[in-house]
Length: 483
Image 1 (cartoon, helix red, strand yellow):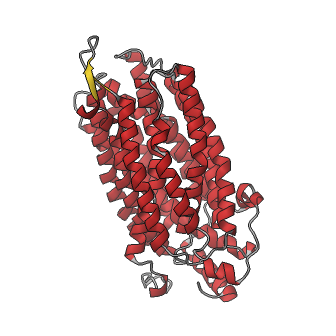
Image 2 (spheres, rainbow, N blue to C red):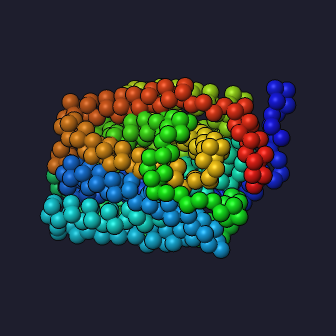
Image 3 (tube, rainbow, N blue to C red):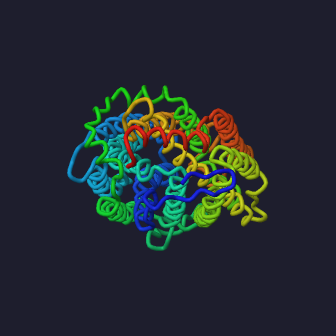
């Protein structure tokens, strides 16, 4: 049933996704959260702070890795779109990809502390490049699957809300990963120069990633067993034409609503990725005065604050979306995000360190809500595209979005090292200069705010309203029946 002016929207029973299936699908986001972002979050503390590798080398290695990742995604997405198996298009890839990603995660930190800087650079680069297609094998079918679990406008937002809330819970280990490496399990001794305890950060990262990798495998298996592909039988019975590799790279960008979705995600992603390490360094070298143990503990607590903020933000954006539509709800959220990032200048305060928890909670709220809307609006684009293309090509859209995001991430990961170097940061120094810390704080506040402002402009141009989506569904079901 579609909503009218006086009648609220009610999800038809056949369009509703069972709660168990929503939860299991949501757990699958662990592959992305830990396979991609756990490594990025640990790379600088392990290779820069512990092994003293120049941040420019780390940024360069991560940039090259993301470029490789950006081109393996469309290839694996095309295989997924065109696969015809007894288990569907997506699930076999999810199973194999989760096993490869889980087993490979701890290997990314199997470096030797006795290697020189150039050897460590080669290890970072080669290991991460080998790992990239393993993640593509999992991520492309996983995100494609989410876009085809229901044809209902609001149930898609409900699904993405489940995934968004679970994602924020699963992000907590990322925030505590560095703190885990700084526990007594990995203590080495007191540094005579600083008086601080030192830790075997490398060994801690290996152990932590081995644990997370095992859970990735478990959640991938659960998705293979319990999440069903709603559109697969329609694709198979109609003998849908094969999706070309060209569609995964270029053709989908001609779809205007999709282009707007890409710009929204790209602007937020680039703005936050460039300063990805600056927030952590602000806490360590400004709020905690250079004490890495205290700083890592605060960063862990801030991860929890971000999680709680997200757990508030996801249901809030769901309610706003139902009342105002997805477009208006997202505009409100983005405006809040701009304010949250700018406020970090005052909320990161060494005299009142707990105030940074407020900043993290607000940023977590804005980010989680944005990605819920991004996923839900992206699923609407698949229906819009089917009107003209006569295809269900979720993989092509997921791949196109992914390779753009990752190509840009490759650039921003390199730029993050450039920005960090430009602040005058020196890993050899236990304390950073006032000028360096000030530059870190300014970049952390301003760069994401600019990115979100660009995203806000893209939302203005997004054309798929609630009413337009109701029309599209009627046209599709009149043509090819219900799914």
